[in-house]
Image 1 (cartoon, rainbow, N blue to C red):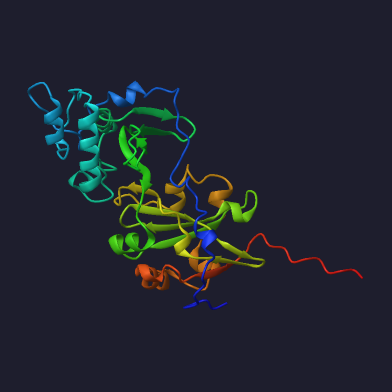
Image 2 (image 1 turned 180 degrees about the horizontal axis):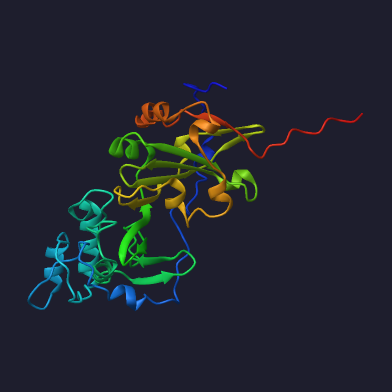
Length: 309
């Protein structure tokens, strides 16, 4: 099967039916933050918020948001709604002055969860522990003009290990910003009608500590499934961030969000299509090629039984 360069044009109706549950995970509301985690401050390695000798004020928090170099035991006061929104907009604009996998000044593998929790609590609507996913979930206030609503934090040995949050980057923007991925994973959901499940496309950057996921709407033609990047949801998809100093696999990072059949039905792109990472990057780094589609076998299609007559 050779699909290189083949253009498929989609009916307009399909382009409007996209998944809006990208990057979402169940939020816990009953389990409190573990006090043994949130109050631990004696680990010397990570980079938490800066200490101030005077009582912190809302203005001092806005000024110190980029400085995560000195441990602090001083609780940061809760910002007013106006200043909280101002701070979040600044963080979205400049990512806290750092580059991925650092997020809003929180560096996986370095920043103490106690200090990240202290900082996030100054503007978050809530922070709770999700026992099913073994993560801390930060929920932001309901601001209509801010699409980011939550972020999850996996904590190991009192240090932020993995950050998971929604991210609006498109496929071409992700390739342009982070370069050629080390692996590309593809999945078609198997639980229920295949059309209703969508396809899951994941760009895995092992050496950068970044993994970006997308959900789109496939075209099913019996034994073939057609994948077109221009059917991916406009809301983008989740991104996972971790320390590149620690070797991690796709399966390590994808858990616990892609559990069960979703994780088991993910395959490397070059195993289920006749295109590889190089072709994918060269083609889709150009946003004008989003309508270039490729095929994969339908793993759930069964040929009709022959008529016994």
